[in-house]
Image 1 (tube, helix red, strand yellow):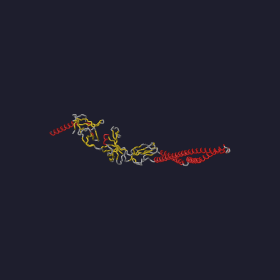
Image 2 (tube, helix red, strand yellow):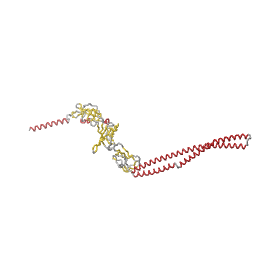
Image 3 (tube, rainbow, N blue to C red):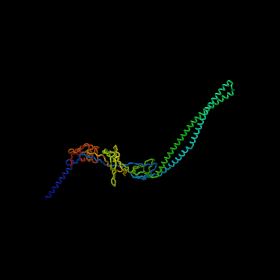
Image 4 (cartoon, rainbow, N blue to C red):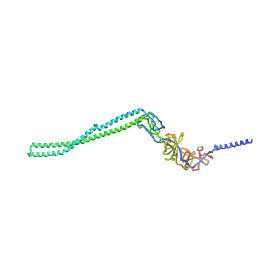
Length: 444
């Protein structure tokens, strides 16, 4: 009997204890039980983990040198290809059209070569030679007239003097009229002969100068024609080389010439391409880089040259690559990877030091080592609430939860630097359990 009473008493005491705990925990009397932490001096970790996307490093474009019709596309975007891998096959129609152009080009080449050869023995060269002879002939005539001119001038002057003497003698009946008339007539002929010589000399000089101008014009025309034909010949030779290159390219399946991953496929089967058009691009093996989006609040901790560790999560296990921060954007932009997010980010590019087998488009983890901040007031990130771009904590103000706006400095995923609360301030660990002004009791 005594044992039963003892047992009942124990059960009653246990029930009372449980009820007391429940009353304490359930805040029946209007007081919320919370856990608190304190703003303490601490160190912010210098290692942050981000998600990055593998992007192409060196991208090699692959072009077509001829207009063509793509008959078959043998690769897809993201596919790894070797330098000899067949990428595309072109239609036979493209080969036939290029052959016809090549035949026309070869005929034009032969015709142009014949025209150039004709310049050295054809009608234009013959006309130029004739003009040279004409110039030499006129030159000799001018020289002959110039030699004859002073002689004839002397003869005409002597004849005129003799005629004057005979006219005077005739007046004095010293000679017969017939003799005087003959001498005067001879002097007149000499004057006429002199005038004719002067006229011919002037005409021959003019013809000589005109012939020289005509010769220069003809020679210039010949030189221009020769230059035009030589230029045409060079263009045809270049066109011939290009057409032969096109013929070689069209007859064989297209290859990239480098090992890598296809990152841009610009055509599909049936596409009609233009000469010089890019068909696809290949990211060379071992040259991939990592694009990381760093939250704006952490941008100040990222500097060019900081070490980084790239971690590729693979089926066979994690593969790590050493890298370095290559570039840090100075502009805050919307995230390209988190669609619909309004948070601004900073674009950071990580360069991997050694070769790698990462494929563009894959996601990797990136650890970036930053500069650690020591002896700063920090609080657990769970204690901070963000509202409309502002940050708040709930502090223990003599047994009541008071909502306090705070200024945040550096941040990591687990801790925030608090710039305007003194070290030692009690902060509610889970701010979502309390309301501003509510009575609280600290759970030990």
